[in-house]
Amino acid sequence: MELCGSSSTATAFSWSNSISSTLHFTPQPFLVYGCSRNSRIRCLSDSSPSQKKAEQMIVSVTGATGFIGKRLVRRLHEDNHYVRVLTRSKSNAQAIFPAKEFPRIVIAGESEWKDLIQGSTGVVNLAGNPISTRWSPEIKKEIKQSRIRVTSKVVDSINDSTNEVRPKVLISATAVGYYGTSDTQVFDENSPSGNDYLAEVCREWEGTALKVHQDVRLALIRIGIVLGKDGGALAKMIPLFMMFAGGPLGSGKQWFSWIHVDDLVNLIYEALSNPSYKGIINGTAPNPVKLGELCEQLGSVLGRPSWLPVPDIALKAVLGEGSSVVLEGQKVLPTKAKELGFPFKYIYVKDALKAIMT
Ligand SMILES: NC(=O)c1ccc[n+]([C@@H]2O[C@H](COP(=O)([O-])OP(=O)(O)OC[C@H]3O[C@@H](n4cnc5c(N)ncnc54)[C@H](OP(=O)(O)O)[C@@H]3O)[C@@H](O)[C@H]2O)c1
Image 1 (tube, protein in one colour):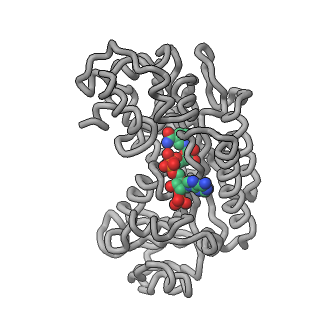
Image 2 (image 1 turned 30 degrees about the vertical axis):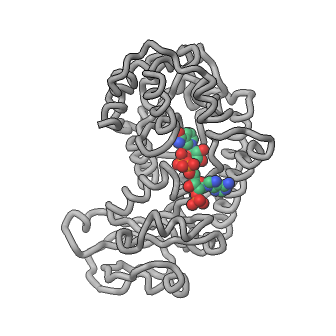
């Protein structure tokens, strides 16, 4: 549906029938161009000229309450898009995204996901049981099954849609763990998968997303270690650095393929609207570092000397077996993102850490 100069005013989401009454949602007046119920609307807010140029999206997000999801939802909301938070816990999501602050967000429990996925412009699939924990056999099963379960649910909801309400794009998370670990190899999107447990999780996770309807553009983002202040591995590592005065983790020779959370959010955002973003895309910064260098830079940014090694055991204590993500790394390059001309804001880890810490 193309934008046009019509100015017929309608109440957007008059189509959202019972859902809007059960979910916290404030219908607002919009200029709607030929939008029918649950169609992929390109609606324009009539509040400012710049907004008039933007194509408004309806984006459903699983894992929206997590470290990456929260940033993505906030970003989409700030840009006047409509976000549908697909969660297991509405009360938790409502506390994170209060209706007053986030009027264009709909929060939906699992029984409502399908209705909201259908009619979305795009879906971002981030959900999964945390990896940075102790890995009992039960947790290992849940790490894999949670990702497959949620991805299947998303894919089935998309595939059950009629053409009219089928989302155009699915952005599904996966991880650089797909490649396995190595101190010497360099991996890009064409590299084969590894042989360890996380590689197996990623293969099955991606395989589930690949079942999506052929008319849906699928981007699988193999995410590296995401750096941000309020979550992910870094938030857990910083107190250790403070305690041990900084220093290498393990041997320090392992590769650490990082990405600043803002760059990852921008990559997902771009993939939602840019048809060139499809297939496998590594979500890592252009300059992975050895863990020793990361520690040195972190020590320098935190103003701590970097000579006292943080013992593996301390890291394992806070990250559980999930510490393997940090202690056994891989060098992963964002070849596809660079080909696509994605403008990374943080190319060097030092700049990323400085931005996060200040
Ligand atoms: N952070 C990183 O460095 C990194 C690196 C590589 C890949 N990734 C992947 O990117 C995705 C998002 O990462 P994140 O760091 O934002 O994750 P996160 O903070 O742990 O959040 C994940 C979200 O998934 C949902 N979830 C948690 N356990 C679940 C379960 N057992 N079953 C179904 N849903 C569950 C939760 O949402 P609700 O409670 O609202 O349902 C949670 O907010 C994850 O799949 C992760 O594996 C992250």
